[in-house]
Length: 355
Image (cartoon, rainbow, N blue to C red):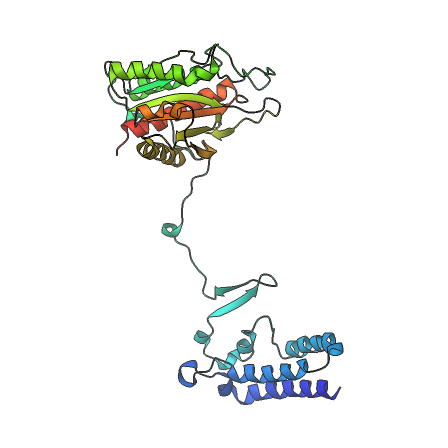
């Protein structure tokens, strides 16, 4: 009990000394090499040490006394700056530069007293998925030259299909009807590139995956080689696919762009093929265009990289060969046709945009 009485008396003395000896509490760090309020800090440290020296049975009581006494003096032990603010009338206000706010038991944030004004030039303007570029972009249009096709579109798995509507309950994921399969998406891209952007396209609709699905890439390679022999290389070669998903969970990969439901896209590349380095540059460029113009348009993966694939997915035949997956079998025809318009804009930016 005597110790507790002594502690209270000590703190009262500290309080009185603070009124009488303010200069002692405002030690100049630059001149004496001690922190501000060294007098208070030292006195409190010694007193707390005295309190802490009591036996363990009194520890909880002592803690309450500590908080009570310090509170009586206007000091918050979780906020040491109150030692200064207790005598703030004696101090030059310019010397008190920060406040400390307790945000949790473990984390503390130091904030400037002077309000921080964020200027517009300091703000990173990230585009929301609803704030997208308008399609089409008339500035990208060039004169169409049908004699010199720049884009070749084909389908290794041409019968990969979509749902006719959101109420379509069919379990089939393949369809030879071009209005319901991935060939229909190719039609949209072909039309958009030629009529809107003046980019000549060859769209081959051969059903390579019929009869012998396992030989699909071998058969589509024959088709690709035929056109490469006839026209030379193309500025862009697109093997257009759609991803596969469980038909029972209706997990379509869809986003909204410009108020429309749009199936997301994903690029697939083969790292082991000898042309991978240049193809990766091409794909990265189109990913950048997509993220800039149409945030959220890309599948979460954006790009799938495999080591070899089946015959490199024919990507070893040109630096400009890409494989693009548009949605999955749970997407609707309308959704993927909307995708075709946005995808065409990305291709046109890559081919006709300023480099």
